[in-house]
Length: 175
Length: 317
Image (tube, rainbow over all chains, first blue to last red; front, top):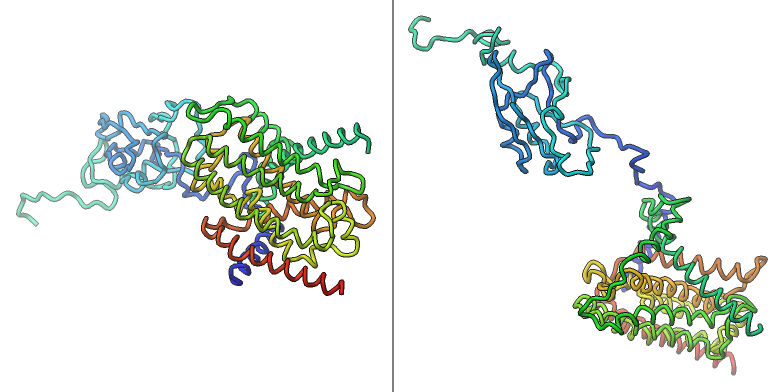
């Protein structure tokens, strides 16, 4: 009983001391909180340093997405590059988990420190490719998928990529 | 005072109590915010004071709805009861040497009677709602208030013994030399606890207990009727603080400043203390509450009475 009384009094005294501590609240619209560069907010599609879009429409982001908010359709360009015909993210379902960013083999899909995406109309939360695509490279400035990958496109044959050995004819006996 | 001036003063008291209760809703939230390291409502007007107006506007313009399954007459009656009895309680409080609506020679008993009647409001509200949460809330409040009523009355008997009167004015005048918070410290502690339970404020808000009973006895209430319950609760809080001032802290007495200012300062400090209790102390379980009341508080008040009586007898002989 004495312990209970003492504990209550100590609690009251501790709370009273908080009269002189600063408020933790960030007065949001006037005062913006600091967001780390890797904060997971609005999703963008980035371009490689040459200005070509990075996304190769491999569907890994759509598979990784736990809430199934990503939809896309793969197509092939004249030069052999793959690209998404459409790329749609439904932000009313997106939980900003960043799984798509982790799954992406070409660093195309990235999350940005922007979270102010309120809309009056739910349908406006569905972002199409033109809303997602940005001109910059995002977090990875030098990475260019087609320059390091072994896939042949117009102007770059097999074995011509960076650090790539020339292709071997496995059916030949010659060294 | 003449009859007219008494009537005017009474109306003034009612206005002040309602206004005070309205401002208190905002003040309490700001104060809780300070103690919990946040701001509380600070958007509307200077320091967010117009939050009161916004809340009132919202409550008053809501649909005044009575659930079809409720007992209509009692359902509407219940919230008015608490406001009326709490307002009546203010009639006997001496705010200054001449500032009192009526100086009853049984003023203290009148106050106790009025605060006991407030139980009916909660109980009837809970019963008439025909809702199981409301019923549980009403049940709890009946048990809580009845058992805390017992030693609430007893805790004040020490004061009455020392002052030799039930008139609140005489009690204040008897505290000329020494405030009763020192000789009647046990009485003060028990009365404070009983007062919290009586006005069912946190930490003893078991009739409402929003975490378990949604909103307890006023689950089915909304709009103006809900506002009446809230008004009754906050007016009750002010009333309890006024009573503590009168009975234990020397009422209007104090140096330099005019009596009414001293009275208001004391009441204000006590209200802050009640808010601090709300900010700091968790709600006890139902059985713990009853156990505290019957096993500790009642014996404490009896001990207090015994010692006060013995002291007075020794002084006389």
